[in-house]
Amino acid sequence: MFERFAGDTRKIVGYAMDEARCSGDKRLGTDHLLLGALHDPGPAGVLGVTLDQARAAAARLDRTALASVGIDAQGFERAPMPSRGKKPPFSSGARSVMEGMLRYTMDQKSRQITTAHLLLSLLDREEHDPAAELLKELGVDRAEVRRRVLSS
Image 1 (cartoon, one colour):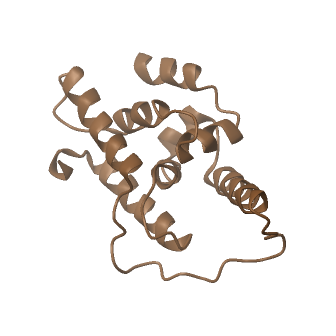
Image 2 (cartoon, rainbow, N blue to C red; image 1 turned 30 degrees about the vertical axis):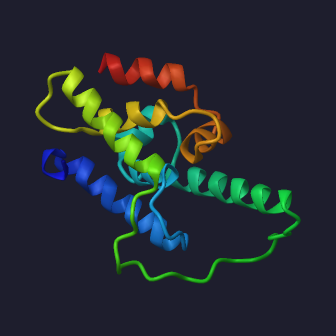
């Protein structure tokens, strides 16, 4: 499937792997795919958020999750993680996003999997999914973004 990725989409998946590694996560999740997309000015512009804003929102969500189980992470910094190394495996949610990208590609009779297909598949994620929670935390109007992506 990766051979069908447009160049920018392939780069985004690489950025997502870097985001997973840098955050110390063992798996590449839907939130990492979203953060990876924000490395590209196109998706960032469509979503109306910056990578720094999204990273800050992800950190807030992590602190809230830890606090819900009684862990106060205020003031703690993550140890620096190596930027390269073993590729993290995809979470089930990230694999589902990949399947959704392929479905959008086939539905639109496109030859390549594009960032638009990635965004549409991420927008399909439901409550409690890391990407859906991150989009909610960022105040992204998913219906409006979907409209913009489909009209471009």
